[in-house]
Length: 388
Image 1 (tube, rainbow, N blue to C red):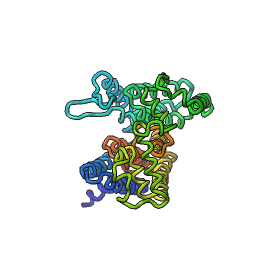
Image 2 (tube, rainbow, N blue to C red):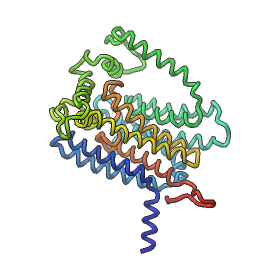
Image 3 (spheres, rainbow, N blue to C red):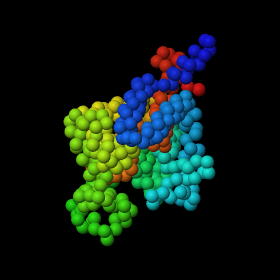
Image 4 (cartoon, rainbow, N blue to C red):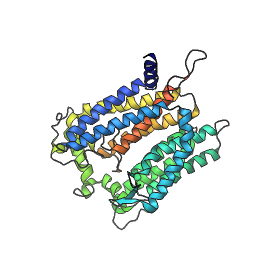
């Protein structure tokens, strides 16, 4: 009996309880909103409940692994991901104009999703190996190549939303490793000039016969519709217009749980996935939206707290990237729903329906718990706690 109790304590020791409490709260909010969004299609509610259970299980399993074990898997995980992305190019399954899936016979996988974890994992491994000496510009160039190769393969599918998340998580690792912000000034200037040009010359640049070269036509139209949704209110602008109406109609206090008219009259498109925040905002209003953002902020802050306490370079870089990845998820999705950013198909963490995204978030939170659990004890000669 004593051995069983000790084993349970060992298994529970890896759990970061503040983070776990926040995740449970997010799961409750997510499932409540999903119940309102699906209406009579109860199968999605049941599927999402199963997805949450699997995600929490995966999180626990990853948390049990020591960071040193996780670090050794980084190059293999990254290489497998790149090979699968290459396989998608030649043997991928096409759906709705995009080739993003690979049919393995017994299951269909989306390799781009695993790269959200594999890329920052690989970059953290790379910088850990180089940490014996001061990082040189060559080290950042190699890191840039490791980041851009999978990002380019994902953009080619095309899947701009996932590519942005991969780029964001990978860039966070490079930045936290010591990349000078001054070197970003030219890129920032180019982006600012580009955005200013698009806004100033919207009427000319958004003409159908104008080729933007760097973007596909559908991506160009998303940007143009963002600038003026009224140009195609029943087509490409429909998503943005209806989600903004839903968010605005919620007002300060909201219409009440299960009382959202835009939701239950089927005006909100993709209300269980990319636009689920519109469902939540319509029913719970400004106060509910702010409360949800506070939960997300606490989640990110807890991740950053684990980051600053990580005992190794690998742990700090990986934990920081996982924390900021969740921030980018929230920022892009809510910006998209409220009409600030173009529609790029990024789910809202722990709210949007989907097993793959929840598995990715489960692995990310498991990595945070693993890094947080294996800290040196404060007493002299103490060993790290938990893990196997």
